[in-house]
Length: 173
Image (tube, rainbow, N blue to C red; front, top):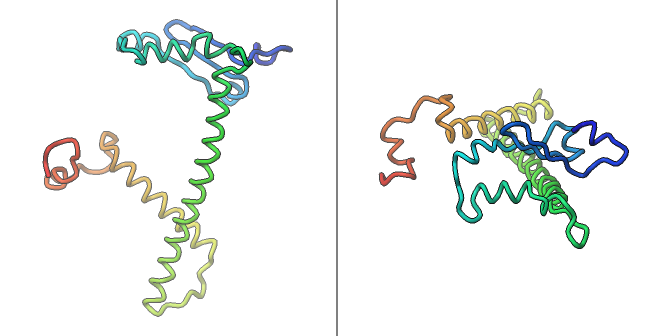
């Protein structure tokens, strides 16, 4: 595929079937080591034959209607990738702003607690405070992820009484 993308007239997309795997690659993303791969054996075993089900989706994703230009010269996959980049940029900007605000909140809390204890801010480096606030934020995010993913077994199981309250899938209240 790399040779195809480096040729004088490279294709926009390449589809390859390798055994049970179906791969779809686009030149720029292939160079970054990114591509779409589907295990056809898994799809066949699941037999999700309903209209709009997994088999229909795989056929639509890898079908010629998704990879060849339509009457207006537009390729469906090219539009999907373009929209994906726009969405990623927006999410990245929002995420960056959220992290900045979170660090600010944590650092301000440290300053307020020191003021409440009549401690000065002498010797506190703003960059160091920001670094420690970011580290604290990472710890919070890790704990939230670990709590939401009990299958990882990073945290001890919640006591039975807590499980009853937090189990939203059951009927306990």
